[in-house]
Image (cartoon, rainbow, N blue to C red; front, top):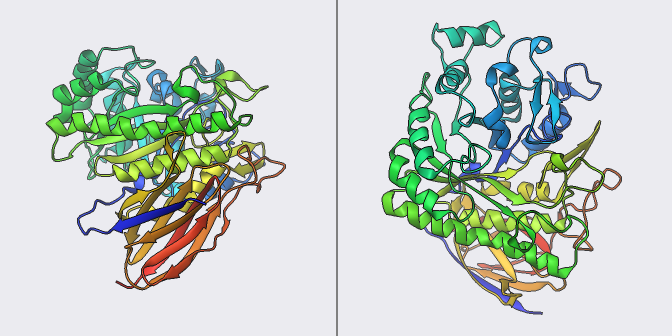
Length: 491
């Protein structure tokens, strides 16, 4: 069995891993909102004010830090006034992007902020630039955040909310290079400057404004936005999905694949490292002080929808392969956490690489959910730099790793990319007097293993064996696995 050596290099000046790196994304798409989060106040499914209790409990358990809403492509056709007031008086809308279904707008601004308060996370609202007006955006922000005796604040009060909400993040448009208007970067930069002017801070909390950034490797878009608008933004978004053979449209299958497809997907996932590095270089030229965050607010695997489902609903199963994809991305975000300070996996419930799947009253947690659970301890912790020496498979590293420290507790996460053979691993340099607190491993008998409503616990973490001697950590990684190790360090 090949051996892997990892040298830790703790540094008091290392950056903090932003909790928002484990952010979520909930779009009006398929059954993400309706049936996944919202069941309504008349439902027999246990809920609090129409929001599913089981889903909220699951999200709280992984300490979800932020949720992005209402899209996605849906955001640039969403008019917020349709989603306020008595629900029986709200107009229905046609979702032209996703499935051609009619939605009743029962989940709107008040319901979204209620969801965030129940989960205990920050809201990230994406505004309508593609088909909306400056006035519409300005009034939405006022409605949400103003404490004043003003028309929009009073409308909010009339609809049952006296105190303003805290709006932490606001996206000025979504994918303006595509479904959000097919704009040129120069044109969008001017629009951003205009619309952003009216995303005002009405209360005590400053809103962090996120500009629409590039599609995958569109470096010219990043160059233009940083040149023309960097002084007006707090973040620049990046969208990049993991695709079979790195080709659009999505191909393959989420559950029926062999070794070639395993490595193809993992290779695509690892391209995020290069993308972030190249976009960061461009941002560094005009923003050396790292004032503008790179916000990866759409990422994850994208396969053709499951057979027998509405293709526009983007429902796909979630296997051990997707769990590996998730851990690889989080490792990359950690390595670049000086610049990457928020990321939002697509999507939270029932869509693409979801945390949770629901079917009526039933709920199942996916392998990807369990990775987020295992990585939760990295939130707000100080990164520990790691030098990993390992063999390669299909030109990919056999092992990926990340580590952090918070309040004297070190969390080490190790991913084995090899679907057939494990690895002997030694980690040195974490500190003197290591004391093992707990260790978990996520793996399964096959690459295609996934949780279903009939077998909801097929892929879940179990205890792992780890050896600790002075400052040396040693263990055998299972094939195709993610392992998390919590340690107390004396010095």
